[in-house]
Structures are given as structure tokens and as C-alpha cells.
Amino acid sequence: MAVSGDLRQLWYALRSGMSVVFSTLGKGDWGPGVTAMTDSLLASLRNHMLDENEPLAGLLRKCLMLGAETGSNSLRQWARKELNGYSSDDKLPSYRKLPSPPLSADTMSGNMWAKNMTYSVLQLPTKAREVLGDEFPLYQPVEELEQFSTQKSLSFTNNGLTYAQHLWNEGLGPFQQVMNLRFTASGSMFAGVLGQIRTQLVDLIADLTTNTPLEELPRKEAVDAAVSTHIGVQYNTTIQSTSGPTAVGNNATAKAEGLSVNDAIRLLDAVRDSTREVTDEGARAEILGVLNDLQDELRATAPSTTEVVGKLSRLKEVASRIGGAGLTAAVSGAVEGLTTMVMSGAFG
Image: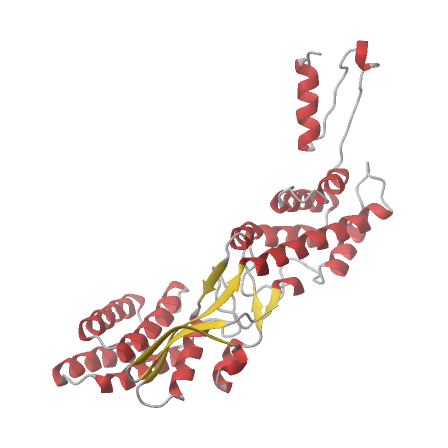
């Protein structure tokens, strides 16, 4: 049997969950005409949320609209944060705070090298462990988490890890070094978080549909209460700050959110210590001069971004020319930390 253009349009509209109004579709084999058919946001959410193939981002955008229709700022803020990602000043829902995953690092002891050594955060020295904490916050948008979930294994680094590596190396003996400290995580860890977000959404919508007819909108107070109960965060105009230990993605800083100038100077002190392995006195004097210039700039009342970037580039260039595992590792950590500070606008 042939399908008319009108019926085909109806089928597409129903599949997309759009609100549809038809004056008439005609009679015949299909019976009386259909009139004033509507599909509310609440009904659309309930009908689609249990479909595991339904993109989570699409469901959250419907929540964004439902929050706007009901006047619930809590629902809008939650959906927007999940779609756009959280900032380091936001209070994260509990399902986005995970136990710290394993650490991986390369190590050097004398002439012996080892790559991709695995450690637990608990194996780090006390000071380094305090920098990292025991939580792993996730600030990324859900669509980025979905990309992570498809990977077998991922590695993450941040300036908190850079500082923890520096503190770890401070306690090691001569000719010993830890390098490239990073978190390693499996894609299934992120898939689990996405599953929890979907479950929170199911619980929230189930609450709203218990006492509200599907063709009506729930009251603002009911929506706010459901968000508070199931998400665990009551959003207002802004979300109050929280600090996390280590984070990944765009705001990968967490508990020690960015290094202070004093922390950066300590990283440069580690570079200074590593110059002891440089046997060429001329080369050693050159890199110490660059270090002094950079530290003087950092100690200035208002360090200049241009000056810091220029001196940092010079330090990297001189260290690359001199070589040496210990010096290279120390400079790499300092450059990473200071570059993060520059990108976050820490200097004038």
C-alpha cells in the first residue's frame, strides 16, 4: 500500500518527538481524521529517556527547554552545565567525582630507565599525595565524556601533577628522577559516569510524571525539588564553588587550582638543582643566567606575560641544547606549569 506524503510527514514528526497539529488527514482506510495532536516536553522526555540509543545530549536539551517552560532555574542550570561542562568554581554533582585512577610515570635511577611504571596515589610521598587528593573530578561536557568512553585507555596530566612530581623528586636521592607523571584511565570509567547521568535523569522525570498529567507542565517548585533530590545540588543564579583534587580537560587543575608564583619559583629551583649534572661550566652559567632572569621577572610586583613567555622560551631552548635527562625533565615540568599560568591569565 502506498504511503501518502501527509502520512509520511506525520511519521517523521512522531519519530522526532515534535509537537504536531493537523487539521485533518483524511478518511478511508485510516478512519476519522486526526485533530489537534500534541506531544508535551514532559511526555517526550519520558518516552525517549529509556531508549539507550537516544543521545544523552538531546535529552538534556529537552531538559533545558523544560526548565525554561516551568521557570525552574535549577533544571536549566544543571542541563546547561552537563551540556557545556563545569568550571573549576562549580560544585560538582557526586557522580562526577571519582576515586583517583592509577598513575603512570617514567623513572630514572643512575643509568637505569623504566617506562610506564604504574603507581597508586597512596604510594606517593605525603606532600605529593596531599596535592592530588583522593578524588578525580570530571568537568567535561557529556559529549566529550562520550568520546572518552569509546577509548580503551587514556592518559591525563595537569599542573597539579607537575607540582606533585616536583615534590616527589625532592625526596629522591642523587641520579634518581620521576618523569611524565600522569593519570591513566579506561574508557569504561567514563561510560559509568554517563550511565549515572542517564539514571539521574530517569529518576528526575519519573518523579515529575508521578503527580503531573503528561499533557501538563509540572510546577516550578516540583521541578526544583526533584533536581535537589536526585542531582544533589540546588542551583540558583550561580553555582557555589567547590575544590577538587585533580581534574581533566579544559580546567585540569582541581584542588590546587593553578600554581601560585611561589610554586612556579620552586619548580625553577628544581631546574637549578638539576644543573649540577651539567659538566660544561659555560653551558651551566648560561642556563643559570636564564633561570635568574625568569625568577626575577616572577618576583616582580607585576610580572609581564610577554617577558615571562620570552624567558620561558629561552629556558626551553637552552635546556634542549644542553641536554641531559634530569635537566630536561625538570625544565619540562617548569615549562608546563608556567605555560598553564600564562594561559589562565596569571600575569599582567
